[in-house]
Image (cartoon, rainbow, N blue to C red; front, side, top):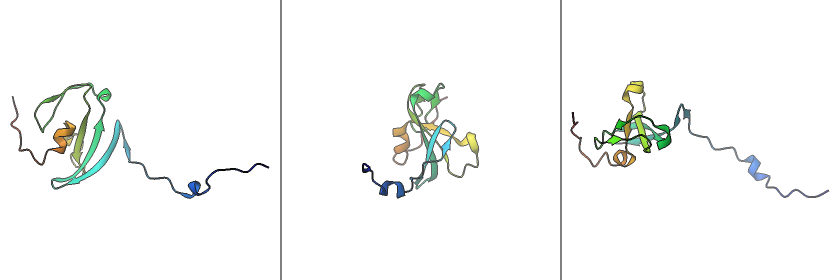
Length: 102
């Protein structure tokens, strides 16, 4: 009978846990000086609306990749979610608040 050349140790390693799925994407927990945040990366193909980034106060056009961020405690639900450019989200600690254009 022929010998099997497979690594038997591989079957003994448990699979790594995957991030918790939500409708429309995956989120990850980010901890910073301003609190704990759940961050979901959104590809441009998933968007059909125009959003306004709170970091730079510019519009995020449909088809543009960005992040959706909300507090980790999720007490406010959907009302607390904000759409940010990914670079604006990473630079939020270096920037001051923007003035809202009306």
